[in-house]
Amino acid sequence: MEQKLIFDTHSHYDDKRFDEDRDELLNSLHACGIGYVVNVGADMESSRAALRLSEQYDFVYAALGVHPSDTEGLTEADMDCLRENASREKVVAIGEIGLDYYWPEPSPDIQKKWFVRQIELAQEVGLPIIVHSRDAAEQTMKLIRETKAYECGGVIHCYSYSPEMAKEYVKMGFYIGVGGVVTFKNGKKLKQTVEQIPLERIVLETDCPYLSPEPNRGKRNDSRNLCFVVDEVARLKGISKEEVIRVTTENAMKMYRL
Image (cartoon, rainbow, N blue to C red; front, side):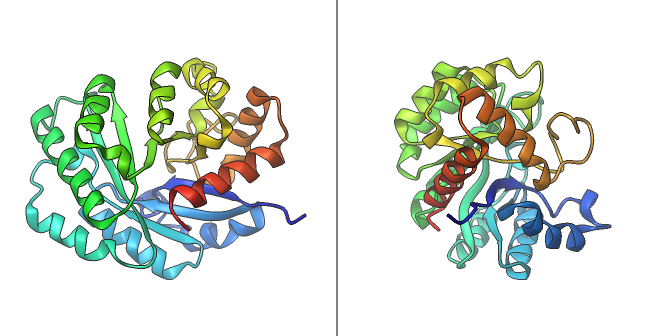
């Protein structure tokens, strides 16, 4: 049987930390067992960069959207720009969008306004959403229910809340994004979440250059480190690494409708 390749559902290869070796690194991924990468926009500029990367590499896809921390100053013209580009063949999601109350700015009202607006955009263009939620568990859930964002489908990225809340998202049809934190000693909640939700609802992600797994914690992250995440998910689930790769890659293909 053909060996399945790992799908990195969330990366930021447009980040300046990759400026020195981006091409070399991306060209090396296939040989390291990585088959697919989604480069995710965090603001208008990085959304444009994600588009460019998706055009340059066969195996790279783009998500377009504005991270809650960058919503100050957004305009309807920006939404028009995202809408126009969302129909491109290699655009697979609207994201990352959501709420981040860890930082005091932008205000919760601004963040909520643009989270809802980008959910509406995803509903208009028929794409899944990539949800960023930090220190905003109840409010994120509330807005997703109110807007019926679950009709778009998508992923709760870099999941950091309780297993119980993860199960609620799974019931709605969302996938749970699991990355390097699952390997951390203090990643207990995420370990419990992985144990308690079906493998059929887990997708793998790096969020690179951030959140490198053990044993590379603190270093620049990239998709090659997903092997350590696979090891830990396999251990927690009591299954083979091959099974983890096969199922999570199938999940990502379904989620992004590839």
